[in-house]
Length: 315
Ligand SMILES: [Zn+2]
Image (cartoon, rainbow, N blue to C red; front, side):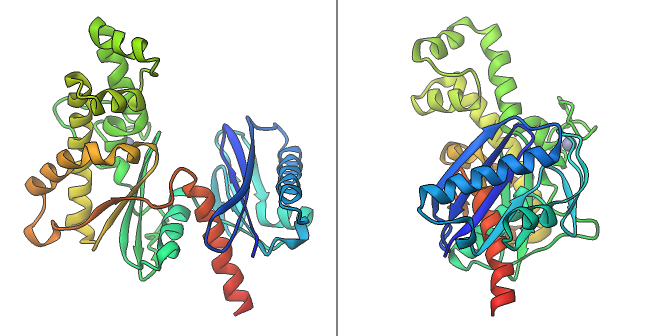
């Protein structure tokens, strides 16, 4: 089986073909976006054809197509893509017109990734947390995403985890998890520390590491005390957020995805410490694991949602 998957971000579009086990058979991408969505869609379908060529198949051999939209989608219609300014685009209709492959557009990358996690091994109940440039989460109950009344359940990135020294959050509030412990927030803390501590900054230069969350995680693995302290701080904030989720949802397990999840082993002791302090006893003993989807979680999630729709239709 061949599943087409498209992750349309504001800064890049990734196109892939996967099999029914969500293995990526081939993928390609282009950076930036076209002003005119029609041209962008044509380019995207061009890449999909290239992927098919690589696999010696034609686009008609794809069984279904899943798309992560660059903004808010309702019934397959992209209402607004903030980064590109596109409005009211019938994503599924436009892709179907260009490919003749049944297409499903997901509501958001985090929810799609969580469905991918569920379908990878048939796990039905868990809390899925994505920590990358932003922080989002999904609640999977009986294998389905619980959307909430207005589709904004799981906004764990915007619970308050710091009251004394809160940082401003893109949502307009202060001290949210996203403002304190997203990949971008950790990166800012690393840069600030490097600016005031020349010895710390030199370590990045000597090792050719970027002065960001990833660079700090490499130094922390080598035992650098300052890097370890920054990781501990991020872990504390993430732990406070997870504690709230455990108290409210009481999930049987938690998966963490996104770039920062690569450092989950470093963060986990501090996450656990906050969970000990901040949860009721019976919500506490929950496995917290790194997502099994890896870096391309969204692509796999879009494929999972497309496959679900295909199975529904084909029995
Ligand atoms: Zn916020």
